[in-house]
Length: 165
Image 1 (cartoon, rainbow, N blue to C red):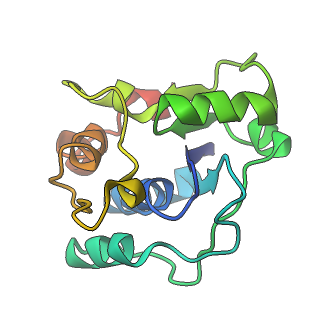
Image 2 (image 1 turned 120 degrees about the horizontal axis):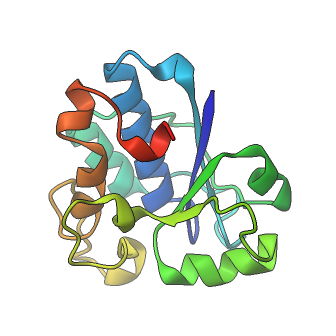
C-alpha cells in the first residue's frame, strides 16, 4: 500500500482539498485499497479547526466527497517515517517542514506543482490569505493547475507514475 501525505500551512484548505480529490481519483480508478491518503499542516495555528468553509463548498460543488468531521492536524517526525510520499504546496511548507523532519534524507518530499505537465506557477497559492475574492475552484489558476496533475487521463486510466514508483 502506498501512503501519501498532502501538506500545507494550516491543513484547512489546500492539503485537505488535495487529500479528498486524490481519494476520489483512486476510488474512481478502483484502486482505493492500494493507497492510504491523509493531509496535515506544517503549523499548529489551525490545529483542531475544520476544513475552511469555502474549500468545503468548492469540493461539494465539484462532487468531491469529504469527511466533514476532518480537523486540522500538524505533521510530525513520525509521519515522515510512516508515509512514502509527502506532497507540499509551496516553498514555505518546505522551510517549515525542515523544523519538523530536518533534512529529507529519504527523498520523500515533493512540490505539488512538480507533477503538473505544464506548470507556470511554482506552487499552489494560499487562498486563505488572498482576501474575500480567494478562488476555491478546480479551475482556479493555482489549485486548478495543481489538481490537473492528478486528473484527466489518470482518473480513467493508470495512476500517475509518482504514486506507483
